[in-house]
Length: 250
Picture 1: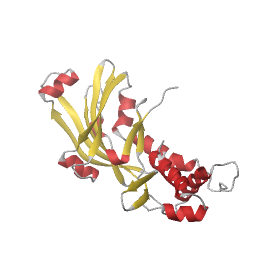
Picture 2: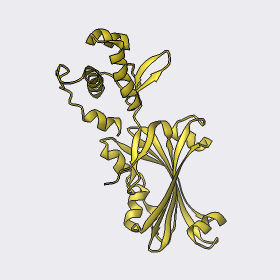
Picture 3: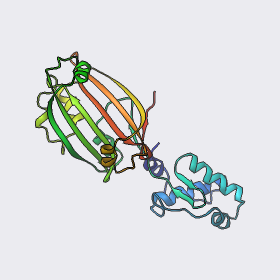
Picture 4: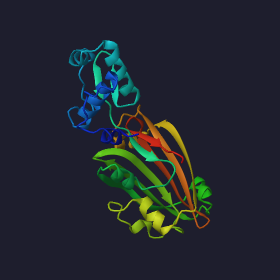
């Protein structure tokens, strides 16, 4: 569960004096309400355990339980010798349906924008032609786009597209429509396969994501099919410290 959703579920006027609520839960609710109200933002240090002990008149063990649980829930993060901070939110993407990243961002009430780095038509390499089931003399469309959430880069999308499935790909305005949105209309999805792994980003990807090359990325590789053809092969790089994938079955 993302922090935005977690915080949204906490009523800001929650009364901490409810007699039936365990004291450690009241401390958790107090901290969550403060974060939701903007008293402590991502990266801010929260009151020390000693200060919370004094404020609530309870044992250090009780306060420690509240802070420990919020840490395990990824709401807080502890830094040895430096205190406890509001954790950076990890943005989520679902794995059970193929959605535009713009829709994912807007669903969280955040602002999406993109920056087109590359848009080209190139002769397919032997490997790429084989993956698409095309002759090596055929051409492919290629795009490289950085996606932002509230101004923070959260994905580099490196996508190859079969012109036979999406002939107008090169004339799209990818500042107003994502490749996914265009492809879902031009090449209705027949099926998809994907894999996920953790990798260190090469220099150009790290620069686009504004991260250090030593920081791990979550890399989603996805192949989509339409009308019996491979329509698109995309590699999507996400900074591991600010992104996560999630899914559920009903």
